[in-house]
Image (tube, rainbow, N blue to C red; front, top):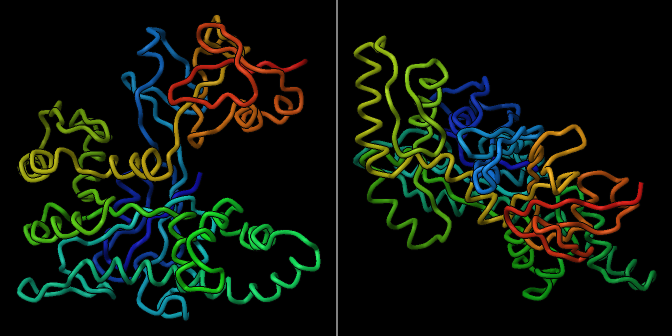
Length: 386
């Protein structure tokens, strides 16, 4: 799974990426710090099945930290977008090209109003309206999609008639490189005509869901904007990427105990200097107590579990031992879409399982069939002929 961190210049995307991954990325307070897309691995975090089943797990494709399963996802921080990106302005062509395979997007938005749509600083007495930046970003992606579709729609319509196949099938083949499926297109066609600009907007909403990370939420100027953003947009999470990064790095250096998403941290070192103590005190009072967390991990989790509707399942080779063939207990945690069937899971685990699929066994050792729809937290043995 590839998820994109998007936004206008100087919104905090690179800081967000580093806060989620501790990757070595360039961070600076000026537009277009990111020229080439940065890619790194972050983790969505959920309760591990080991706690529910009272066993000690041996994760192989993920990790378990204190009874929480950390499941890796690829994150992409792309160059900042400016108005006119779909026409090639700024780094527009690169920005949009980098988004092609993203399953979902986190729009890192400067909610303080202290930067404009080009990433330039604004004075506190003449702030920018963050709402305008949301409109810019969504409009640019919509125009990009609209242009691609318009180049193909007439030709594909004629080809569909000739081959006597649905046009959505041919369009899906053409747009497969953008991570757009035939189901996405069918859903959009129920609401708008193929040639319309509205169709492109709906297709973007169906195929690349966006969650808004209202960043720099700890700044005083952000308070007046957060309420307005939440009123107009359903999926808005206040974040402070700088605070999350500070906490992650302090924990990495053994100064504090902290896990991503926590509402508190504990100082475990007596080697903190005065500057570090003041910074941590500020984060505790002005971020964690105010927002409940830095919001960064919550934003990633919410994109995957709420916007994209993924669930976590644990395939095993032996339901009795809850292990793989090597004895590793609850070895793998897989992210799959809600509604995924057991047969589809078998194909994701291994092609041989799909080819020789028989069925499955649930935790109660009850047989389940190919069309069984997986539930969040399912531990299941996939049966196949050997």
